[in-house]
Length: 247
Ligand code: PGA
Image (cartoon, rainbow, N blue to C red; front, side):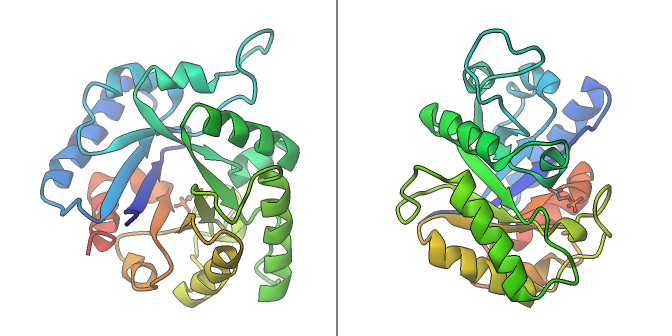
């Protein structure tokens, strides 16, 4: 059976390698005590910390927050799947709302997913960008159906085994969101909808998940983990979230 997945999305944090190392060390110490049979933990730092962190992760896996759709060549500032694979990375977050807000199109996200799959980096595809708190469930489903159709174009989605994160953009803790998570029932309903399209993929929720509110999400049978931003920068908070998905 696929394990639950709890993903730390560090975003543009921390600022120095010592802090990144310390945070991973604290998380690793906590993971020793957590039953890891049912949950996998992923840490997605900024690229520059990968060379050092690859040597200190044991129980967690490493992920990245983006890759280029290109493999090599004249693409200033880009980093490819093959390059990040050198650092024992296993996952890549794609289609995050903060990157869609920078102008990443569904077409580009589709090419990035194809590149990730080619090199056996598991995509964690985020959907929910463009949705609004005031939208009805049906309107949200419509937006997400469009994202899935375009982001996964050319793939057999009935058989596809990736991770998809439902991230209602308004529920993210900082930046574009309000810091208020959706209710576990709302998340479960949208995730059920995604499940009807992608029956073999692992579906997780992201948006202001904390150690204090995680139990409600973990109690939903179809929510198989969490994508965690703000709370992943505090080892105790983050470990509380991993633990909730280990039961
Ligand atoms: P948050 O971020 O947990 O800080 O809301 C989630 C995300 O943006 O992936």
